Image (cartoon, rainbow, N blue to C red; front, side):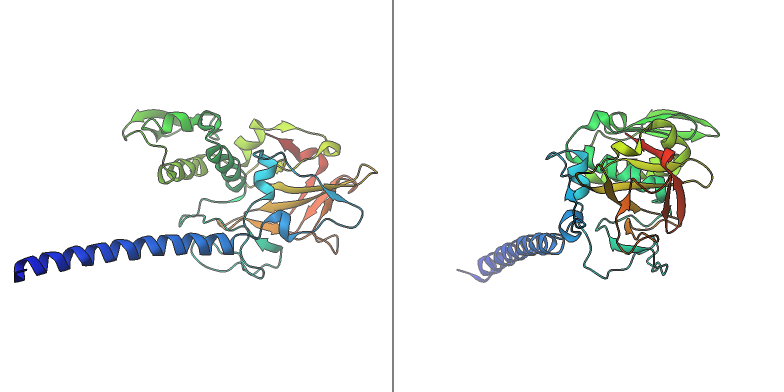
Length: 277
C-alpha cells in the first residue's frame, strides 16, 4: 500500500468512525430520553382514597393526556425566553418544548395538545382550528405546501412550499395557529358539556381578551358519582404546560362537586365554562 492509498483508507476509516459515533449518540440520546420521560401524568399522581382512575382507551385523546411525559420532580416552569416562572401555582411540568416565541399561551397549549395527539395518530385531516376572524386553518392544506397570508382581516392560502408532513413543518403550522387563534375562537369551536360528565380532554374556557383556558388531563371517580380531575395550563407570557395545584384543597385533584365554581391559582371558572372537542 502506497502513501496515497493509506491516506484514502485512513479517511474512510475516520468517516466510518464518525458515523458509528453519531449513531451511538443518537441511540444513547433516545435511551436517555426514554428514561427521563418515563414519568407520566398517570404514573406520578395516585388516585385519591376511595377513587379509581378512569383510564382512556388506548390511542384515545384521554390516553394521550394521561401519558404525557413529565419533567423530573421539582422542575420549574420556563418561559419561552428561558426565564423561570416564580409563581407557586403548579406541581409538575409537561416535558414538551414550546419554541422561542411568545406564542404558546393558554388556548395555544390546549390547541397544541389536541393537535399533537391527532398528529401522532396520523389523523391529519382532523387537525383544523379557526382563527379569531373565523378563517379555517386546515393542516391538510398546509401539508400540501400551502401557506396562509394575512392582510388586515383577510386570510388566503398561497402555494409557496413543498408538500411535507415533517414535525418541523407541523410545528410551523402550529405557530401560525397560535398567532391568529385564541380563547375566543377556541371557545366558539367547542361544545358545552355538563360537569357531571367531565372527562380527560375536556376544557374549562372563557373566551375574551384576555380569556383563559385549562384542560383536564386525568380523571378519577368513585362509586357515588363524584369525579375528580387534574388540570393543566399554559399562561402569559408563553410558558411550558404545567399541572396546576388546587388552592382550595390539600390535594391537586379538583372535584365536579365544587359548588359551581372551579377556582384555579390564576383564574376562576364556572361549571358552565366546561366544553369538549
